[in-house]
Image 1 (cartoon, helix red, strand yellow):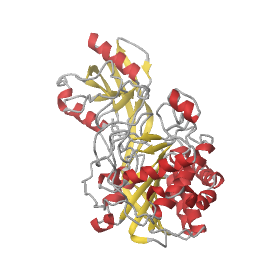
Image 2: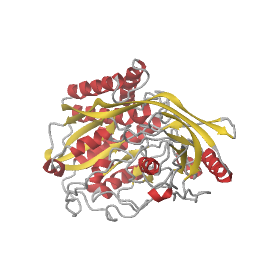
Image 3: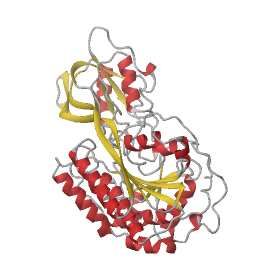
Image 4: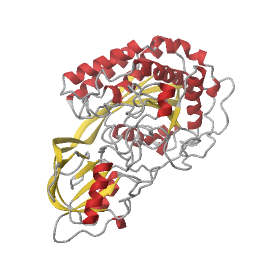
Length: 511
């Protein structure tokens, strides 16, 4: 998924009873053996069959399945047909979104004093342009960086000195603390002609890491690694440094894509469990792990639920989101277009975004906020326990990851709907401790092909698919069969701040 902050959504809290789940209905005390039949039916082979189908679709469509392209349309058609054959009531929810494509790689070259070109990348929805100008660092870049992320550079208008009124200038600002678009907008308001955002500098936040601005922007905005950005900041502080920034982009503000929504025929329509995964890839690659893995897993679960005639108390709604990589736009459109009454029927959201990373960790969203300081809405702690208790029962470790709004649960928790889910890791770096616990390679990304052309069928861990797929099936079974309300988490919703140890959640970092 693309790196972006979610556009603001008005918060409407859904009232949930705070009583514990009834003893007969389960809660997270549901014994794992109760889900064994479904877990055995959901196989790695079945998930991989869907992944192979997604790979074939990408092969025939410019090697990607991005929303707004024929590859996504074919992926949506495949999912829709599969669910209809399985007996679900399927709807296709179409919506308009701004489609972005980089027409040529960005170029960032030092003109004075002359130097080699920098390795750079364009932020999604960056404006096109060719700007040559003096580099001016933001006033509160944190150099050297603190051990934990703390930078808020560019988050306030006063973080930028007023730009020259007579000559072009380029703002240089550190990642951290707020949405990328906030930094770019503040730089524009201060009079700058282009913006460079460099990574913050902590482990996992050092490499070149562009993201998305969430919508069309009229200045060139490009990325630098921490090493290049901090060196450039030092050079600018020592004297005049002139850069040339070149970008070439295309934006279609009226592109059309869709969500695929499938409802089970049983279950209480006033208690709907939304099981979601985004279906689209980035333009740069086929997206077989991100997020073919999540989509294929919930598609296999949906098929087996139907085949086994699993009876649930909640109505199951399997959702395949479009335009996630453009900014969670599919899930956001879905939530925003629910009436208040419809929203009140949503029991919970389970989110599965990347569950096959080759250097994986079993990350569980920290619903109660006890590990990361950021809790989900009431009931999210109960969902977290469903996953963590399951892994414990299987003798498997898990790590917490924060509710930081980087995936399609974001629009749900923004309106007070409890959520939870799994994540196998993206661009974050595996620690020595994680390598000892989970295997794999310390010091390397959980997914070395994240958002790249190499995110193909070879970029999948079958072991991750098996372990996280079983946990996903167990959660659908368990949460779907609860008789009572979800219990309140120990930490109030929205309390605290912070990111999970071990790399954070996937998708759209706000900074």
